[in-house]
Length: 281
Image (cartoon, rainbow, N blue to C red):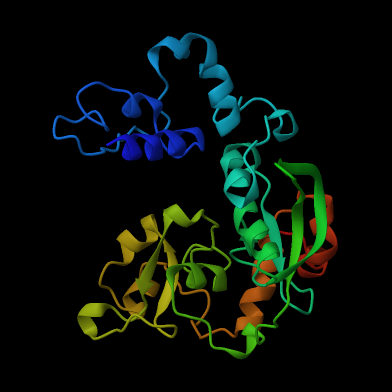
């Protein structure tokens, strides 16, 4: 019994035990049976007598005391060491993603633009998967660790050119092929106001594929219904362009023209060639 108390006391002094459990009456661990028990505490639990004075410090250390109106450079950096410590400031730097380039220093994808969160970028740097090409003017700090916040990273291993592959048939790619324009009224719409229309109605055996699907606004889609193209022409509705399967290069060219021009300065050199001369959105 004396030896077991000595072992528990030694563990407590080393920070591996709980003084409260070691000296609680009624057993070595505070339980009636005399067995050593382990107290479980909720993550982030703050004792009542400490809440008044320490709650702000605790929140600041965890990174959750973040003013959304302040710039990330004003946020309190994490104090814990290693990558786990760095991850606690995710709220502070969430608006600063890293542009991901292929090994040939071309964007990995354009639509959607290849972006990684700062946590993913930092982990990729430490795992040796990427090279940091450029950084923001912010430093992520931990105990014994200072890491510049990456703004542009490049993969070490080249991913084969995606333009050699056939594009997937998706709503987004159909809208992109048609430049987000209704193929009956030629008006441009946001994606939420567009739908896919069967050129040959489904009731007549029309399939949903590249050669039979076009972007269509909700008004024109309602007017067309299950009518054939000839019936639509009699109503004054004419299909502007015959649908075909695009190449990946064609989709990338259209995607480049849709990329925003107001991006971080470190990104522009890698995106300007995709914008092209025609800046019409």
